[in-house]
Length: 373
Ligand SMILES: *Cc1c(COP(=O)(O)O)cnc(C)c1O
Image 1 (tube, rainbow, N blue to C red):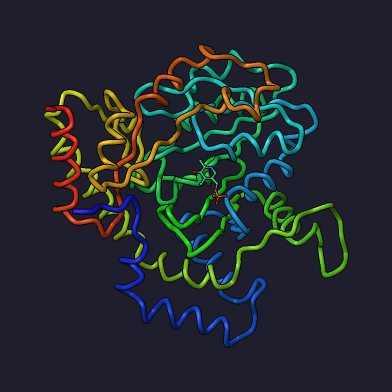
Image 2 (image 1 turned 60 degrees about the horizontal axis):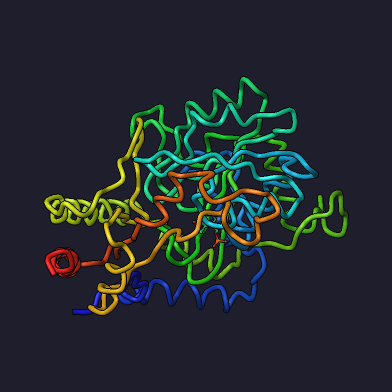
């Protein structure tokens, strides 16, 4: 049996007519840049997340770069974030000559450890950039109270966090990205809500920040050919918006299926003493964008799974403080021991709404076979 790490074709084949007709409608209309499909998607995302403003941009990375610019994460200012994340969570700061200041992650949730933030605050600190990674949100209660006390702005990297909710499903919940000053989503194809190409979004509840984000994606223009700021050319593509609107209709079901798949894995692997699972912490509703385990002999396991045609991925093999591009920050090995340890043990297994129980069985049996050799 061959199990792909990610398989968008299955969903496409299930709803082929719907996707094809939405895409050809855009082409027939000829309205490719910020067409109706983009504003429709923005309205739907506002409704789904409860955000007051939703601004579609070209990618999650662009969303981070633009939001950092707007929030003043630049010009030698310091922003506290995690080293155990995708590059874009910190490169968005360096791009504007702000300084990423790393703090280690929590061992059980892999998220930025909110208890370590305050010791890193200096008179140059202007913000906190929490990343809601893999399956859960950071401790947003703690982060928001630190931010309030020290007058810092919070940019949530919710690139992987579509559907995650702080405070669970009760009436007080807040969708990821809407707790801090600004939040960003990525619609990269593998993400929980994934396009057929690059796409991203900025959300905020703040009138001024929402207005700026809308201007910044069209070169800083307040109206056509009137430029108030030096902005960007970064718009969510109309065809991608059409695809995303269809996927958004089915997102709750897709999220439920991911949770069911995660449960299959946990049931089957719970008696395997060589693997451990991250723990969803705090009062929140997680979403399994990725299903990670911590595995003994991780690299050998990854090679064995590959030999057996099972897709897998390692997020992330090198923490950011040890990346060449951040060597100028002066960090060294041993600075963030938890992130470093996780990067040597973590491995992501195939998870998507369309994966079958037989396929999960095969993955789990293959993992157990590996440890019995
Ligand atoms: C995917 C991702 C991004 C970047 O999103 P793109 O749409 O690929 O540019 C940023 N941060 C995190 C944590 C991500 O997982």
